[in-house]
Image 1 (cartoon, rainbow, N blue to C red):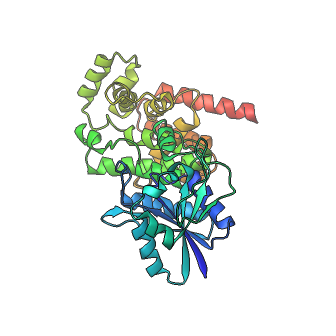
Image 2 (cartoon, one colour):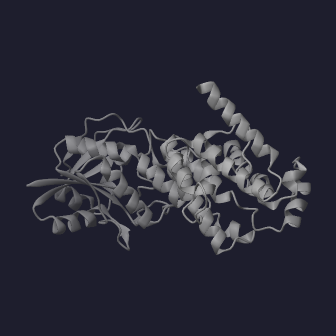
Image 3 (cartoon, helix red, strand yellow):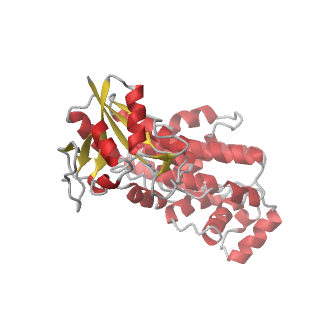
Length: 378
């Protein structure tokens, strides 16, 4: 008879604590463990992420072991009781014995679960140790085994707190789950209504989302926070739809000290102005994110990797029409951010000078800074 375990809960989001518990259960003799996010948890606040997003995060997390499987068994349009889930699993897998996996923090309440005595008769229980919680329990009919695994210290609340701080939390979140969260903007405010408020139309929004997706991919490749890259990308063109006169009025209102060559050109000014709006109106306090937004139009001396990610993502996102050097920039960006940024600046300089226009001195300084740094490395 097969032995199938079910690890339920909100999975909001699923994290390494869940996965390590599932792996410990497999090592204890189960043949398969189902990662089963629930739709409506009993006696708990509503999840932040949608059922579809939590299910997809479970699918991504299940890549950790072929014996793990994301299951929709608890995505029922009703309060999820374990006894009902076990009955459904017994129907779905008539040749299997079901084991319910839970953390020690939930163990002492187990006798008070809905139809607990019936539940105890239908399945076994594996408990994962957690610091500060008793892992032993005696109850009539309860078949309980304590898993031999390190105590679980992570919680979804801990993960969400780290995500709010724009940290990918690699020791808590599988990389692909963190990437999905960044791409979907989960556990962050929905900034699309804000962008609309500032006049962003459909075309510019498609560009913004393309920059976000590209920035997250580049961040993953180059060891940059994907959450920070996503946020910077979502807000980088916040001021772009504003008329130049309005941009200049806000620049004076905020007391921004910018060169005239920038304040006179909306294509350059919208970067630093977007950073100011993000900080003063939207409450964004992350200095790295504000820096990336501010310099995405001009670059600057001493660009960070996040600065470079946003700068080049803006230049190469998939909605961009083809222009000289684009294919080379896209290729370089995957392996050498600095080279891709420098190439983009050089192509912009060629374009501007060929039309008899003034090339931004801030960008010129950024180029020289990059060249000097690369020469020092060589």
